[in-house]
Length: 246
Image 1 (cartoon, rainbow, N blue to C red):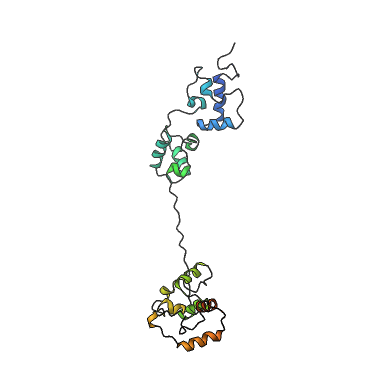
Image 2: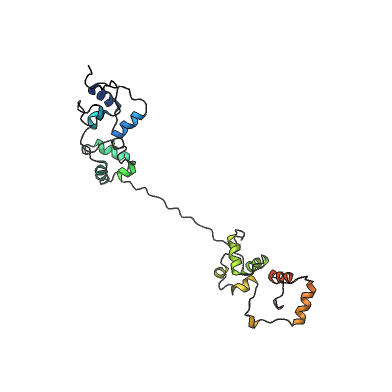
């Protein structure tokens, strides 16, 4: 004959005996019970699903099974009430619980009772806002070289256009004491325009002054170029005098 509290497939303890054992574990909620069952510590004659095994055989609810006092507020309602107390830390909470002012429907150990049902730490439960200190970083002003020195540096690198200057700055090769925006740094202190800074001295075509053709021809012959390609490369190298027409 199968006794009350047993099943045909496995013999479990009577509900009262099983419940008394579970009460000794002092688990605070159903989530804690599930974790205990997964731990491998649960005796085989204690069912992992007591609500199913003992249904119609004396089962009441999880409060009765775990030995948790009934009537606790939901996590959200309990947290809302506690936050209004404006307690500063966990120590203040413990003192409040000892004062006798805490309502009975709010657990003194909310971290255990509400584990797995909304608990997200004491700062969240008490409504403590962590103050983040803003650290002010003081940057030492960079001492840039003079306009003449910066211009000489750009010319030494044979940078001919504003676009090339930007690429140079992005390459990471630009020294810290050479400004990325010389037009701002040297405004009113030597700056006129990019052609002057880069040494290209671009002038409108119709205002350019070139040496006579014969003089230009003599210049080109003196270089002993062997092809038109070599001449074009020379023109773009920055070595050709501005007054010699391309």
